[in-house]
Length: 172
Image 1 (cartoon, rainbow, N blue to C red):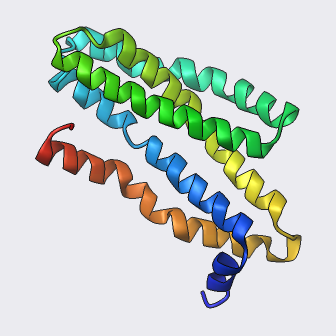
Image 2 (image 1 turned 180 degrees about the vertical axis):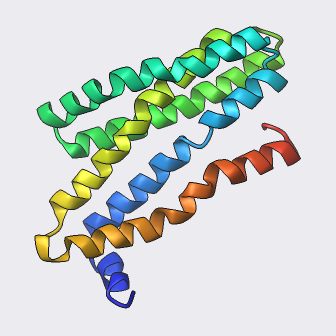
């Protein structure tokens, strides 16, 4: 553990990748909450919710092709930027769905698009790992991977915490 702190504090590019990755993960925490939101605030029927559950399949199916082409033709760095932008777009679309629901509009189509885009964005996670591996020398690579896992471990609870906040205080 003593070796990991200097790696984090002494290597700015690695630190920036970790921060970017953490922000990227924050943009994904809303995905499971969209189903609950769709039912409670969006007034979706059971049939619409059932259909909404299958929307991520479309995003997952195309994600591998999209991200592999971005990495192959451009770079992992560009992929990371695109994943961040797509995550912000998804967050804005979630916010738009909230306001549409508040006005009484049907949110099935915009929420479906949001779920597809979130699912498209989830596999971009591996690009962050690839960038980390490409940035560091082979001798210290395992240390960087362990450090990355330790730093990002709390992010695994993001959806749970967001769910508690939404349940306690509402969606906005």
